[in-house]
Picture 1 (cartoon, rainbow, N blue to C red):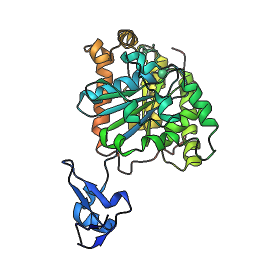
Picture 2 (tube, rainbow, N blue to C red):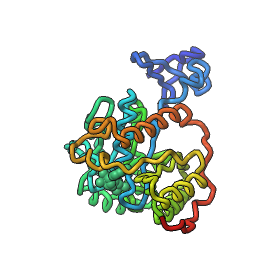
Picture 3 (tube, rainbow, N blue to C red):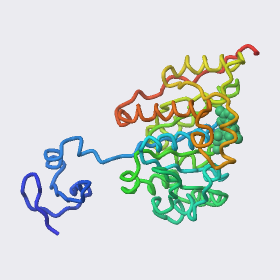
Picture 4 (tube, helix red, strand yellow):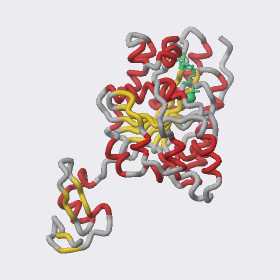
Length: 324
Ligand SMILES: Nc1ncnc2c1ncn2[C@@H]1O[C@H](COP(=O)(O)OP(=O)(O)O)[C@@H](O)[C@H]1O
Ligand SMILES: [Mg+2]
């Protein structure tokens, strides 16, 4: 159907999404060219809303990925932002931790093409979750059968639906402890990664592997992913080893090394009560530490789309810290 350009008044037939702008109250405007759209809406309005996309990644198991994903997502949601949390681990710990099992899981989104906003289960105010379970193993096999240039981008294709970006301010992906196709899919979707690192010697080796993985993905998928934060976890300041590992991480990642999450039994107990740490033990160290991370996410969200410094310095070499 022919339309009249709201900027220059010329008649034209819309062929591209950018040619139609919809205001929050549902009013439609039409623009024949990008220039006309920019002229009328300005650069700010020209930028389509894009949810911030963060993967919580470390190839090592038990580094606090799921705990971080759940409590950062919940913390940001408690601050009034709309958050989508996606579990990409077949163990399904996100759903278990929050006490939900989705009728439709990430498997259905990836393999059957179910709309992510239909698979998402509302679990708390402003927080939706796409769960995973053992069927995800079949999704991995299905992904492996796709054409080589497609198999790492299926998640991006499915989640790039306008509804996801419109509905959510933040998408958090909890990754599994491996280097599988699902994690490659997660990395090709996100713009940034938070790496939870346990405060022990081998953790430094793990960080090096994550940095290498991210570089490989960037090279192969031509998609830039920034390490926006390294989050020391299970920190016990009484041990010399923990203090030295923290110093090493701070030395390498500078301000991108966040203050540590202390070892806190309440964090380990909360999932069995199907609660976030803020619900289960709001006065605990765990709640205080994850509140700080949620505040950091909010404080850095405004600049998320800006050209942030890209991580390209070498990963920390695990120089043997002295025994505690
Ligand atoms: N800071 C912490 N202090 C104590 N226990 C923790 C802490 N963070 C996580 N845990 C517990 O450690 C285990 C592993 O954490 P999890 O988040 O599942 O790691 P990952 O997802 O990397 O495998 C879980 O039982 C979790 O409840
Ligand atoms: Mg996990």
